Image 1: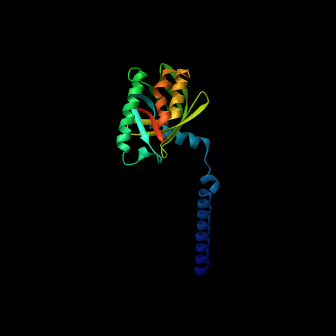
Image 2: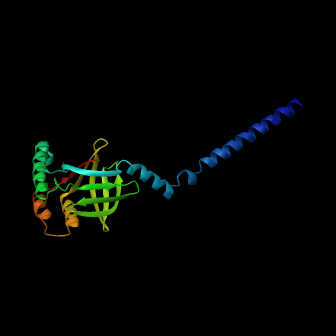
Image 3: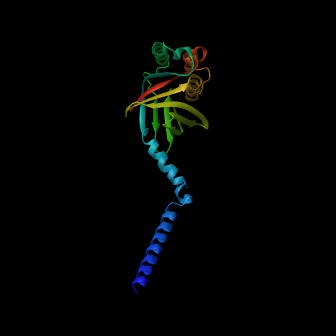
Length: 200
Protein backbone atom coordinates (compact mmCIF):
# COMPACT_ATOMS: atom_id res chain seq x y z
CA UNK A 1 0.00 0.00 0.00
CA UNK A 2 2.85 2.35 0.89
CA UNK A 3 4.50 1.64 -2.51
CA UNK A 4 1.22 2.37 -4.27
CA UNK A 5 0.90 5.77 -2.51
CA UNK A 6 4.51 6.62 -3.33
CA UNK A 7 3.95 5.81 -7.03
CA UNK A 8 0.69 7.80 -7.05
CA UNK A 9 2.40 10.88 -5.52
CA UNK A 10 5.21 10.61 -8.05
CA UNK A 11 2.71 10.49 -10.94
CA UNK A 12 0.82 13.54 -9.62
CA UNK A 13 4.11 15.44 -9.23
CA UNK A 14 5.25 14.53 -12.75
CA UNK A 15 1.86 15.53 -14.17
CA UNK A 16 2.04 18.90 -12.39
CA UNK A 17 5.57 19.55 -13.68
CA UNK A 18 4.54 18.68 -17.24
CA UNK A 19 1.54 21.02 -16.95
CA UNK A 20 3.76 23.86 -15.72
CA UNK A 21 6.23 23.18 -18.54
CA UNK A 22 3.42 23.42 -21.10
CA UNK A 23 2.15 26.67 -19.58
CA UNK A 24 5.65 28.14 -19.53
CA UNK A 25 6.22 26.91 -23.06
CA UNK A 26 3.01 28.61 -24.20
CA UNK A 27 4.02 31.85 -22.46
CA UNK A 28 7.37 31.78 -24.24
CA UNK A 29 5.88 30.93 -27.61
CA UNK A 30 8.13 32.82 -30.09
CA UNK A 31 5.14 33.81 -32.21
CA UNK A 32 3.58 35.56 -29.22
CA UNK A 33 6.78 36.98 -27.71
CA UNK A 34 8.28 38.39 -30.92
CA UNK A 35 5.16 39.54 -32.70
CA UNK A 36 5.06 43.34 -32.89
CA UNK A 37 1.65 44.77 -33.64
CA UNK A 38 0.76 48.14 -35.16
CA UNK A 39 -0.63 49.07 -31.77
CA UNK A 40 2.77 48.35 -30.15
CA UNK A 41 4.53 50.56 -32.72
CA UNK A 42 1.98 53.37 -32.34
CA UNK A 43 2.31 53.26 -28.53
CA UNK A 44 6.13 53.33 -28.69
CA UNK A 45 6.06 56.18 -31.25
CA UNK A 46 3.76 58.26 -29.07
CA UNK A 47 6.07 57.68 -26.10
CA UNK A 48 9.10 58.88 -28.11
CA UNK A 49 7.23 61.86 -29.55
CA UNK A 50 6.12 62.93 -26.09
CA UNK A 51 9.55 64.50 -25.59
CA UNK A 52 8.90 66.91 -28.49
CA UNK A 53 5.21 67.54 -27.92
CA UNK A 54 4.30 71.23 -27.92
CA UNK A 55 5.27 74.50 -29.55
CA UNK A 56 8.91 75.55 -29.92
CA UNK A 57 9.95 79.11 -30.82
CA UNK A 58 13.13 80.43 -32.44
CA UNK A 59 15.63 81.94 -30.00
CA UNK A 60 18.75 82.10 -32.20
CA UNK A 61 20.79 80.37 -34.90
CA UNK A 62 22.32 76.94 -34.36
CA UNK A 63 25.47 75.55 -35.99
CA UNK A 64 26.97 72.07 -35.90
CA UNK A 65 30.21 71.04 -37.61
CA UNK A 66 30.84 67.40 -38.54
CA UNK A 67 32.80 65.24 -40.95
CA UNK A 68 36.41 65.80 -42.03
CA UNK A 69 35.96 69.46 -42.87
CA UNK A 70 38.86 71.66 -41.79
CA UNK A 71 36.41 73.51 -39.56
CA UNK A 72 36.00 70.36 -37.47
CA UNK A 73 39.66 70.43 -36.34
CA UNK A 74 41.34 72.40 -33.58
CA UNK A 75 39.60 75.62 -34.60
CA UNK A 76 36.12 74.12 -34.41
CA UNK A 77 34.80 76.32 -31.53
CA UNK A 78 36.17 79.49 -33.20
CA UNK A 79 34.82 78.44 -36.61
CA UNK A 80 31.40 77.65 -35.13
CA UNK A 81 31.32 81.00 -33.34
CA UNK A 82 32.17 82.95 -36.50
CA UNK A 83 29.72 81.00 -38.63
CA UNK A 84 27.00 81.44 -36.02
CA UNK A 85 27.57 85.21 -36.07
CA UNK A 86 27.37 85.27 -39.87
CA UNK A 87 24.22 83.15 -39.76
CA UNK A 88 22.69 85.47 -37.15
CA UNK A 89 23.26 88.45 -39.47
CA UNK A 90 21.65 86.56 -42.38
CA UNK A 91 18.66 85.69 -40.17
CA UNK A 92 18.35 89.38 -39.21
CA UNK A 93 18.24 90.27 -42.90
CA UNK A 94 15.32 87.87 -43.14
CA UNK A 95 13.79 89.44 -40.00
CA UNK A 96 13.68 86.07 -38.21
CA UNK A 97 14.45 87.88 -34.95
CA UNK A 98 11.14 89.75 -35.41
CA UNK A 99 8.99 87.06 -37.09
CA UNK A 100 10.26 84.23 -34.91
CA UNK A 101 9.90 80.82 -36.62
CA UNK A 102 7.82 78.30 -34.70
CA UNK A 103 7.83 74.50 -34.85
CA UNK A 104 4.94 72.50 -33.39
CA UNK A 105 4.95 68.75 -32.74
CA UNK A 106 2.26 66.41 -31.44
CA UNK A 107 2.47 62.84 -30.14
CA UNK A 108 0.74 61.43 -33.24
CA UNK A 109 3.59 62.47 -35.55
CA UNK A 110 2.06 65.65 -36.98
CA UNK A 111 4.07 68.87 -37.20
CA UNK A 112 3.70 72.45 -38.37
CA UNK A 113 6.16 75.26 -38.99
CA UNK A 114 5.60 78.99 -39.26
CA UNK A 115 8.39 80.59 -41.26
CA UNK A 116 8.66 83.82 -43.28
CA UNK A 117 4.97 84.48 -42.83
CA UNK A 118 3.95 81.08 -44.22
CA UNK A 119 2.57 78.00 -42.46
CA UNK A 120 3.55 74.47 -43.47
CA UNK A 121 1.82 71.39 -42.11
CA UNK A 122 3.19 67.88 -42.40
CA UNK A 123 4.42 64.85 -40.49
CA UNK A 124 7.63 63.88 -38.74
CA UNK A 125 9.48 60.78 -37.59
CA UNK A 126 11.92 61.16 -34.70
CA UNK A 127 14.77 58.79 -33.81
CA UNK A 128 16.27 59.99 -30.49
CA UNK A 129 19.13 57.45 -30.47
CA UNK A 130 20.42 58.87 -33.78
CA UNK A 131 19.36 62.44 -32.97
CA UNK A 132 17.62 62.44 -36.34
CA UNK A 133 14.24 63.71 -37.44
CA UNK A 134 12.63 63.26 -40.86
CA UNK A 135 9.98 65.78 -41.86
CA UNK A 136 7.56 65.45 -44.72
CA UNK A 137 5.97 68.65 -46.05
CA UNK A 138 3.85 68.61 -49.21
CA UNK A 139 5.11 65.07 -49.78
CA UNK A 140 8.76 66.23 -49.75
CA UNK A 141 10.92 64.38 -47.17
CA UNK A 142 13.64 66.32 -45.38
CA UNK A 143 16.04 65.03 -42.73
CA UNK A 144 17.64 67.08 -39.98
CA UNK A 145 19.61 66.65 -36.78
CA UNK A 146 17.61 67.27 -33.64
CA UNK A 147 19.31 67.47 -30.26
CA UNK A 148 17.50 68.05 -27.00
CA UNK A 149 19.20 70.30 -24.49
CA UNK A 150 17.30 69.95 -21.24
CA UNK A 151 13.51 69.91 -21.24
CA UNK A 152 12.94 73.30 -22.84
CA UNK A 153 15.53 73.63 -25.58
CA UNK A 154 15.98 72.01 -29.01
CA UNK A 155 18.82 72.38 -31.51
CA UNK A 156 17.41 71.72 -34.98
CA UNK A 157 20.01 71.78 -37.77
CA UNK A 158 19.91 70.93 -41.48
CA UNK A 159 22.43 70.47 -44.25
CA UNK A 160 22.80 73.92 -45.83
CA UNK A 161 21.03 72.94 -49.08
CA UNK A 162 18.11 71.46 -47.12
CA UNK A 163 17.74 74.59 -45.01
CA UNK A 164 17.58 76.63 -48.22
CA UNK A 165 14.95 74.21 -49.53
CA UNK A 166 12.91 74.74 -46.35
CA UNK A 167 13.10 78.53 -46.77
CA UNK A 168 12.19 78.11 -50.41
CA UNK A 169 9.16 75.98 -49.50
CA UNK A 170 8.03 78.56 -46.98
CA UNK A 171 8.55 81.60 -49.21
CA UNK A 172 7.45 79.92 -52.46
CA UNK A 173 9.89 82.17 -54.35
CA UNK A 174 13.03 80.52 -55.72
CA UNK A 175 15.03 83.77 -55.94
CA UNK A 176 13.73 85.19 -52.67
CA UNK A 177 15.74 87.25 -50.20
CA UNK A 178 16.02 84.08 -48.09
CA UNK A 179 18.04 82.31 -50.74
CA UNK A 180 20.20 85.37 -51.39
CA UNK A 181 20.91 85.95 -47.70
CA UNK A 182 21.91 82.33 -47.11
CA UNK A 183 23.65 81.53 -50.39
CA UNK A 184 27.06 81.97 -48.70
CA UNK A 185 26.43 78.64 -46.95
CA UNK A 186 26.36 76.67 -50.19
CA UNK A 187 29.44 78.37 -51.61
CA UNK A 188 31.78 78.00 -48.67
CA UNK A 189 30.83 75.22 -46.26
CA UNK A 190 30.68 71.41 -46.40
CA UNK A 191 29.78 69.08 -43.53
CA UNK A 192 28.16 71.96 -41.69
CA UNK A 193 24.67 71.74 -40.21
CA UNK A 194 22.82 75.01 -39.74
CA UNK A 195 19.42 75.84 -38.35
CA UNK A 196 17.62 77.03 -35.27
CA UNK A 197 17.86 77.02 -31.51
CA UNK A 198 14.31 76.57 -30.27
CA UNK A 199 12.80 77.13 -26.83
CA UNK A 200 9.49 75.98 -25.38
